[in-house]
Length: 381
Ligand code: GAL
Image (cartoon, rainbow, N blue to C red; front, side, top):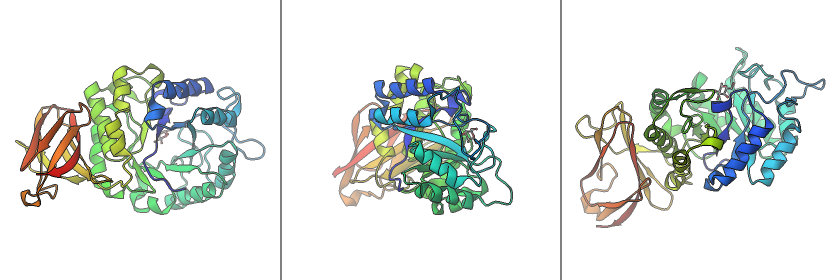
């Protein structure tokens, strides 16, 4: 299966941990539709760790916990498919999942067959309890081969947290996305740390296998399994903008059944989703910095651009510091010096405001934790 754009969906882990069940999944699926998230592009509903019984059956097959999923996974997949959604499930390349349930190590072909028979569409594949003598690349490769030979299109979402220099081998394995970060928690510190770590990995992200910066915490407000301090809506907005701009997978992690209007507005922002899903998936490059602070990217402010399919540009200014900064980009850094006879028309993806940049630089005062993201058109100067 070839993956052409970053996968989008909702995953149970951030809020519900191991406490998942069919009722929760169906209510969340219904919310995906009623809230417009499905129509905005979110299509996978992913059951993370905790869906199975702690032991395989007498034939060595994985079994869904009958208390949590009384009708089994296949019936749930049918329901989701009828709603225009897809079902994701979770297993592990090691002997057990991180939560202590059976892993798929040395059962790869059997489990892929089971998932295919349940009409699963997506497999998140973790890295806990990996036998030390086994190679990560081979374990992901074996599961990818098993899925590719299962008779069903099942996207392999690798989750080895960047361990063992995952970035050097993951594209050879057949995974469709890979966790390029450690686990997120619901705090601004965690968001900042993951974004900074991503700077060195932007060149790995391309069609076929996308960087996965971990599930979104937007809208968690300190609640649930990875709930911590929580963030302000401005920080959640910047978090979403960063993940979208960097073409990460977009997996919602809050309880969407109770999300606020502001959370829904952030998660459905059409301009950012279009940038995230841009067909070219070109690597971002640095085009400016913080005016009174430093030239070029510094630790806490990033100003990046991406060339989009069809000729537009995406330009993002991100202030991860705690204080307002004057962030800027220059036309020279965009390879558009004055003599080339073109200027930019910027549309702010949050406010819809339009402005033009004729020469030199564009500067904006961006509050601490805030961002600006523009879609830019080239027009005649
Ligand atoms: C971690 C993984 C999390 C979640 C958890 C389940 O290894 O990074 O996203 O899947 O395991 O136990």
